[in-house]
Length: 413
Ligand code: NIG
Ligand code: FE
Image 1: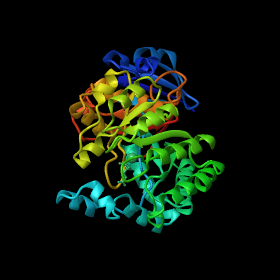
Image 2: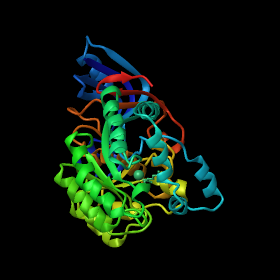
Image 3: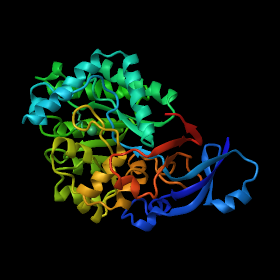
């Protein structure tokens, strides 16, 4: 199908950011075209230019009037825990009275409370819950979601979560990138014998998920009270052996060396980094690994933010994501994360917009296909009714998305 989109007030292409592969994005790298048009052919962007030229060039084709809206590449949320059942509002109330996230986890709440609910839920329920969340993501202008398992923590229950994702990949009109996070926590049945669960992960779960082709990435939560450095190394090396790409949760509360390890294993992304060390920053700066920062988590847990400014100035590619999950970041509003990054982490507006588009695509290994508006790329576009693109982060927490195009087709939400 061909489609001409006319009357675009501003087209934020990010062509300059893509050219620099996401390092040190400046305002001019957003490569904003005013009074623009786009021509889409067979799901891909075939032409980008001035509105006046488009009218002469493409005469007889289906046209969509953008009504003077601002268009960005479809937004990319590169870190979500979208597959879960239940809610932890009770823990939020406890935290308001002084309990910490880690104390709640130690008492068997936290991740394990969501594991209990997710194990009880049927495949159908998990699909329904995720469907509602995917619809909400689209309504925020998100056309790509990374989605983790990690609330099953047994072969059967992790497969159930991953099968839910596989079903959604076929049915939903959005790009979904599945990640196996069997190493999110230790399940209660292995509380006294963590090593036996690591054996299960390495000898049964990772090989099975790989054989069934249910995930692109493998992830581990390395932190105090969760996975140790040596357990993480064993799991990640097994994952590489079975063909997974890597992304990890590291340096969220305590730096255990996860960043240095993951860089040495060429992980695509290292996420959280609120407690990253100087050594970790140096290792990242010398690598092609993306640092995915999650300001919603710091905000919601009342913790310090990751040192975005230091990371970017050192040459690290920084992405931003919601970390959407029922415990530490209960939001799907990706643009709000970008505002937090600007006001709390001292990122520039251009860096923040790059971080939820091009750099997020890079963290998923998809930057050749999505993340900027350039000829040859998949036609994923988000339309916003705002006076100018800066307004998206300025008027914070609001949602100005009016339309989403995924693979060249307008999507209902
Ligand atoms: O990324 N850090 C580990 N996992 C999630 C939290 C999951 C939960 O609390 O349910 C995170 O913040
Ligand atoms: Fe997370």
